Image 1 (cartoon, helix red, strand yellow):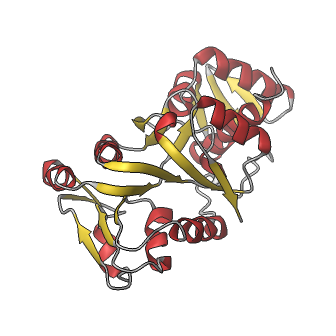
Image 2: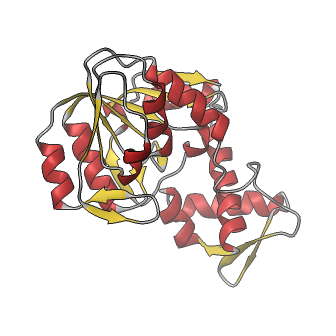
Length: 257
C-alpha cells in the first residue's frame, strides 16, 4: 500500500463496517459492487478487518464482531453541521442573475436558503423545492416529472425534456458517493440520468459532498471526476484525500467546517 492510498483504503474499510452495521452480513460480491472495487480488494480488506478483530467470515459472508463498529455514528449519519457549512460556502459563489441547476441532494438544496445574490434562477428536479425560500428577486423552477418517494425526486422523460431546454451557468449537485474508480455516483439510475444531463447542460459543475462520501461508489455513475470544477467538502477530508482526488481529475477542492 502506498502512503497516498492509505486514507482511501481505511475509508473503504470503515465503509465495509458501516454496511455490516446496517445489513448485518454481506458477501464479497455485494461489497465489491456497493463500493465499486474488485472482489480481490474486498477480500484483502476483510482479511485486514478480521485480523483487527472487527469482522468474522462465515460460509462465504462477512459479519460484524460484537462490539465492533464503524467510526461514524451510523452509516446514514446526516453530517448536519458539515452540510450546513458546505451549503453556505457554495452560496457565496453564486453571482447576480445566474441560472443554476440544483439536484435533489439535501446539501445542494440547502444552499438555496443562503443565496444572497440577486436575480438568481434555480432549476431543480426536487419536488420539495416548493417549500424553500426564493432567492432575492429570483425564482425557483421545478422540472416536473415522475415523483419518487420519499425524497421527492423528479425524473423521467418529462423532467429530462425540461432540463434539455435550459443552459445553466453552474450546476450545484450532490452525490451518493465519490470513487476514483467509477466517478461521481447516484443511488438510482433515474437520478443519475437527470444529474448527468444537468452537468452536460452547465458551464461548470460544483460538487457538494461531505467527507463520508469519499471512497463510496453507489450504483450509477453520472459524471467523471475531471468534470468537477470544484468539490466543496468538510475538514474530515485529509490532505492525502485531496491529493488523491486531484490526481484522479477533480480540479479544485475546498474544505470547510
